[in-house]
Image (cartoon, rainbow, N blue to C red; front, side, top):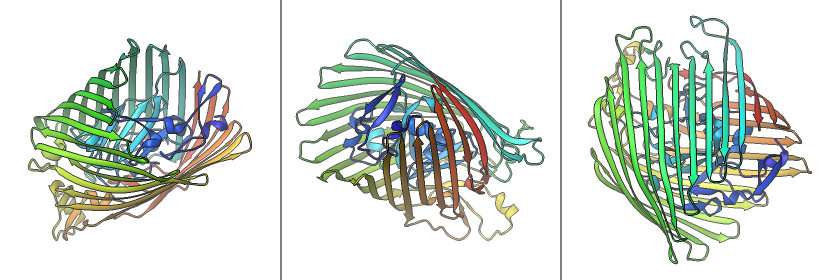
Length: 632
């Protein structure tokens, strides 16, 4: 890439330099502060945000030593990624020390979280090269997005049409180590391919992406193969009315040794297929009123085979569907902006294990945002939700931003949120995990304050939050006085409401760009996140899944150096979980761009660290890969 192209913000910190995006063989200069955060009804310029929002852009992603959306998210402060395999095979995502069920995932503002289980939340059909940016909204987001945005939301935004283009991207690599005994022969290897095309004109626009990955597995029975297909279209009827739609499909299968029920699931295997579609229209009535109806549907089938070579027993086949109808609107007046709308969501599951169940959510919201007072931004509102199993609930919230001196802003955020148990939480029946149909919903109040500013050329953000979750849900087993590991493994986990879970969190991030002459530049992003639970101790004999994997310390460092056509980047993570030993993972990339070609080499986990992110799954050690990208 050209060195000038890297002068823009990373991780959601405003850069007063410029962002450059390539158009043909020229560079278009834009201000990163003009990036608009879409909350379905309000369109908020990034520079005017008054809550904690971090952004990873397409340019960031193209220069990072990553192969999947999950790996990208691992470099965002406060986001905890617990992978069970490379190449995005399966990953759990949590925010600010919450569980993987408490973060809401969206694609272009459309909810794609899975009602069966949060383990399928990251079934996203979009190729990495088709993503324009990833927005991470930390804190109480229920007022904005409704139920299940308890600790925050992650919105994946695909590329908007700029011109006809085609990108072909191939990559592959190996650990250069032999596979585990009993799982074939040869070296551990993996690779993938992406094709992304943009076709159309200013009135009729199309985005098509196809990606596929395959690996023979870093451990016994951990091979994976997936295919992701996505299409997005838009048509402008006139200056005031437009249509947009999308459809995606995933076919993913993998060996699931140790994924969910170790150590007895050594021979387990899983096949997951996900289909997604949406259609919406947008209508502007002058400059004052905007309305947008939208319909979306997400279907997921999950075939979990506890014994991959014997399908006559311990096989779980789940099919779930989530149909959503939404109406979002915005009214602009001399007093400020009002957002109002409705949402109806129908969720059902048909399963030989969970049974057949249906539930409905009906939500409505009202918001108000104003900048009438000098240097003060106020955003207040409430979301009301009815769930057919858990009844009515209201999520109020307020965001206040005050620019007390130039380039410095103080934010205050307060909000309530709810997480409704998944169908797996309620009804699962397995030898190692048993659901609980009597579970209550989780409710949380969160209070936070953040300071954003600039010292010289360095961007700084400091944040503190306090979250109190009522009826906190954790999967536990009561081993009592049992000391034999074999006997303990026979006791199933079950989810329970365990009272209050109170969490204090502090995070800080620094970012700076150094321009060295005309054709060289250096950029760094440094982040640290510390989580301190008030109540996280259980009685003797209780074994908890949450406590074991709960994040305690997280330190992140990314560096990018550009010199003419060369670029060098490194991503570094130091992670300490509540009851596990800390680990440090460092990845590097060296790339060269000439004309339409970008060629790069990666070394992942360069220090060859041995570590686990989730359960009993050991992550790959040192990994070497090579990639080539053609952009036309």
